[in-house]
Image (cartoon, rainbow, N blue to C red; front, side):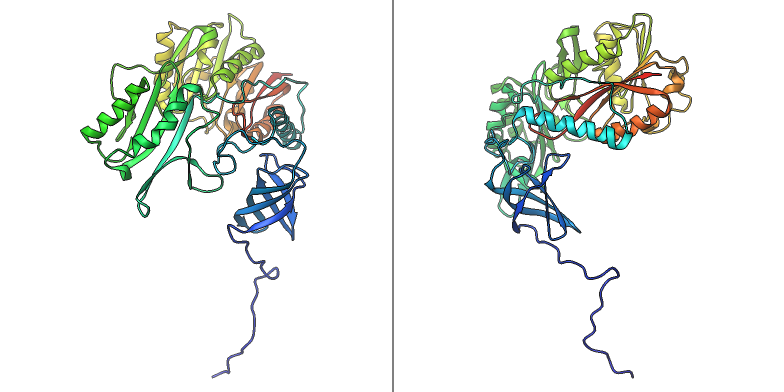
Length: 450
């Protein structure tokens, strides 16, 4: 038998592996610049640190949230040397709640950051700049959010119900008694919600709570087990006190406790009422949403004799105002229930020049029946994944004008490459400040056929 060799140390190919930085470790850092998502960037010992709550030029103490190879994610715990741009965070939960990551920046600086993010993506990925930059579309920086999802979790070890918003960089729940970005009608509900939920008999069976303020106020409770009569009474009394509708989500789709109740929101400039049910997609910022629809119509310049295509139409947020201005609107959406709801919204608003279709818009359009006659103009408002398969066919539809509403500058830039290849030029672009206090960027772009 061969004698075992002792003392050898084997190492992976490529050299020794650096020790991983433990979660929770604190590190003093100098922030070099801001990343596209608003986090500060620092470099230390061959690693790149992304620090929530830090600004360029600052010296901070950061706590590690996670580390992957040469990348470390952290959050600011202490500021030793502050940037001249820094302002006191308006929210008491700043730095713990994960919802508002750039509230330490003045609002005008937030807008400038988002503008740079959009311009950088269009330049770096697509190699283009719009012929005209539109001014940012914005509204109040607080009290704007009409819909919120509240996390609810039973801590079996502590025998305590946790209610609030997810923490920055973790699945922990931060107890929230006040949220400055919620619309005023939801503030008292938010502050009293935890105490009410703690009175229910089966807290371990509770899921999330969704709050909505539109044509009425609504409170939806997700529950994984049937509610007792006593629990229903508590919920109904709470909603009655706040003059809110109660919606319940057990098995199947969310349902109102009172079947006669209607819920929705208005597009006031067009005298439109859109039905909405908890779980449907809706823009959370009502003021910026109306301004966005108005700008989209202005840029698209629809004419009375035109046939217009609305892709990713949702509840009809764009399709119904468009229908008031054109001969026909064809609207397409991937979720069948939303297609049905949009069609009902058109009928209830006495708009009969709209047709709604269900289609998987992540796939090539192929020879869809609704696309065969062609369109003068197209409006699309895709999810974060963008609309690459859809834009590959747009030139063949005959559209001369295209308005692209984006919630992700990276996929907008990627799709711009394809649109330019098809012969469209980027006429105008600008940001939509749908989510103040966050680094989330929404944008609008106008393309015209060359």
